[in-house]
View 1 (cartoon, rainbow, N blue to C red):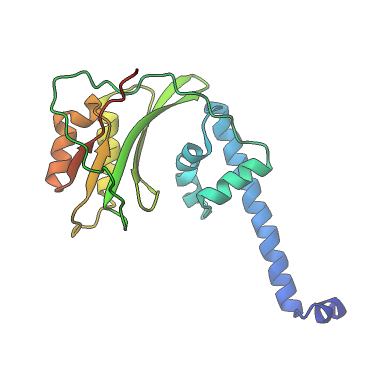
View 2: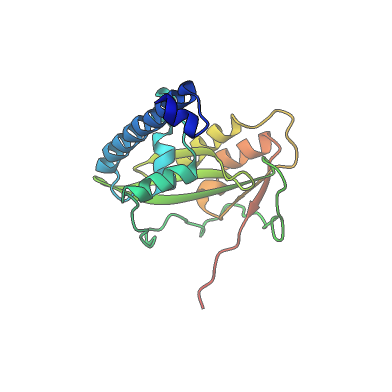
Length: 211
């Protein structure tokens, strides 16, 4: 062993530290894969990004840290990525009487975090039907600021995701824009009041018109 270490210019201590690191990473990956397998029993069609969000609390409880790219790579290496299905389920209801705000982000590009939040709702297939995932993403850092998962599509889902996101916002923030579609969940009074209370400007994209 000493001869091999000298040959490659490594000390015995460095060799064993590297070995422990490699073994530790394999054990950590096995734990992550086990948690993914359990989650996939309930959410067989959940994509990598949503799966990482769903498992984040368990990772933190086990002191496991893994980024989005490494997580996707791990899924890919273990043939656990799912094919994306075309979203056919309606999550936006914009034909309502509530005030709709103009689009403030045409040609706008944030240069730091907490300048632009983008809200959206998507659905995921579970073993018991469908669930709705409300997300608020920081457009600059691409980090999830707030989220809510519910089996029922209701306005309160978006409000709870916003409440989570607001807890991450510095008290001295300025100039933050919240951008979304014109769905009723983003135009309702409770949601708008929370944005106004934190001096967050409201931006909404126009509906896509079919030809």
